[in-house]
Each structure stands twice: as structure tokens, then as C-alpha cells.
Image (cartoon, rainbow, N blue to C red; front, side, top):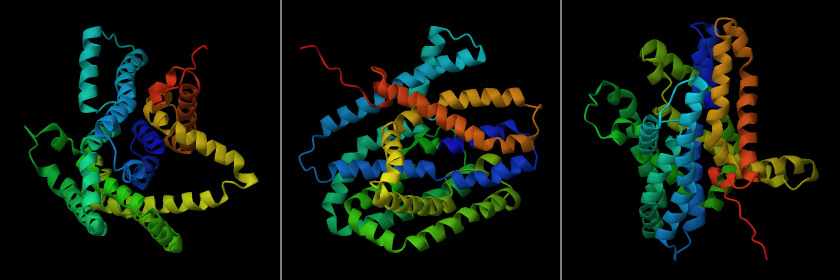
Length: 361
């Protein structure tokens, strides 16, 4: 996710050139992280609640909306002030309040769309639980139907939506990237994997070489996808790089399968002494991953400032060579900010990890 947004920052800072073309052509290869987030969300929710037949849905909603809602409200407001400070804009309270309300309602600022989507998911989660519990013998059929619906939706998104008139459309249909149903397959896939975890794991581990090979071929195929979109279909850059494409559904699905295989391979070795340092890093990183997502705007904004200062002074080839350093800067800076919030009370609540205060005896 951070690599995706960092690459976009470098692309925006370049003029038309071969280095920029290289980044554009390789950018599609990174378009699996959003789907991975949705898959993991579905997986975790079903791991926690599918077998809990006494689940209180109102307590579930209270916990989830509070845990995600407080950071969502805070960071939307804070980053509006931060952006104004970075640009030297004078932001009055009434303007800030109006912008904040817009951002909260629409989820279209500071990469907050994911939280808006999960808010919608929490709302329909009881229906998903009911569906999988009611039709226990038809889980594979549900999975297949979901995949077909997703595929047809993506065909519409790529080939039909761009030529339609979207005036007066409801917001979540017009901007379908913020709509939960645009990712329904990944939530369903996460639920399916959670319920049939051992069977899925056994199948994937037995066929991991095939999974890795297909994923690698599909990753290389994104170059062909870019060529077709740009040179043959003559799409705009937005639609050329669009994440909602049928090919990318298949690629992202295989990438998710590969990541699962890698995670299971890691799990077999994580208790070995030589892996202990990495295991501790993974443990901490998993706890602050939501914070990394929430606070990425800090590092990305400073990166854009640096790139803007280099505009015209640094050749595009040099910017391309600096891309790995950009990745390290954004990831490292965001990780440190999130770790600070995680360790220092009371900031943990801002990344969904509220600290418990021990009272005096």
C-alpha cells in the first residue's frame, strides 16, 4: 500500500520520459494491496465471530465503530490542519469544519476510503454471518457466485462506466471505489478461507509452487495490461492505471494466495532462534498496521515536498533511482509515528490501540 502511494508520488513529480513510463508500466504490479486489505478484514472478522453463536450485534457495532471511528474522525480533522500548515493556507474554523464534515461523510481524503468501506461492511456483517451459517453446505457455491458477480462488475467498471453519464447518481455508485459491494468478493473470500482454514491451507501448501509460478506470470502480465490499456485502447492515465479491472482481480487473488503461502512458510520457522528478531518485528508491526495506514499522509506529504523541491533540478532517471529511498522514507517514518502512538499513552486510541491506564490503589 505504501509502495503504491509512494510510486504515485514519484510519477506525479516526473515529466514525460522513459523513467516515468517505467514507473507507470510497473505501477499496475502493485495493485493488489487494497484487495488484500479487504480479504484480511473478512478473514479476521469471521475468525472472531463465525462460531460465536451468542454474538451481540449491538456490542459488535459499538466496539468496531468506536475503535475505527475515533481515529477516522481525528485524523480527517488533523490532516486538514496539517495540509493547510504545509501549504501555507489560512484555514478558518468554519472552512475547516465544512471540509472536515465533507471528508468524514465521503471518505475521499487522506486515503480514508478503506475505513468508510469497513464501516459499511460492519453494517452488513450480520447478513454475511447469516448467509454462511444458513447455507453451510453451499459455501463453495457462494464463493463462485461472488467471484462471477465481481468479474461482471469489473467489466462494467472498466468498459461501460467511463462512457455513461453519472449526473445525479448516488455518491456510492458514482464513486464506487468507496462502496463496500465493489470489494464484496474479497470479503467473501476471506470469510470462506476463515471457515475452511485447514482445507484451504492444505490445498495451498500442496500446490504452492504452481501458485507462485502463476502469480509471477500474472505480475509480468501487468506490463501487457498497461500496453493494451495505453496503446491499443487509448485509455486515459486514470483508466489505464485503474485498480478495478478484471485482470487485476485475478492477479490480486493469486497474489493473496501467494502471500498466504509465504505466511505459512514463515509460521513454520518463526520460533527458530535465528528468526526471533524478525518475529518480534512482525509482531509489533501487525499491532500497528492500522496506524501505519492511518498516518501515512505525514510521510507522503513530506516526500511530495522534497520531490517538489527537486522538480526541474533532478533528472527523471535520478528520481527513478531514488525510488527505493522513497519507499524506506515513507515506510520508516510512518512506522515510527505509529509505534510512538502505540507505546505512548494516550495516543494509542488514535491508531485503534487504546492503552489501559492502571489506577492508584
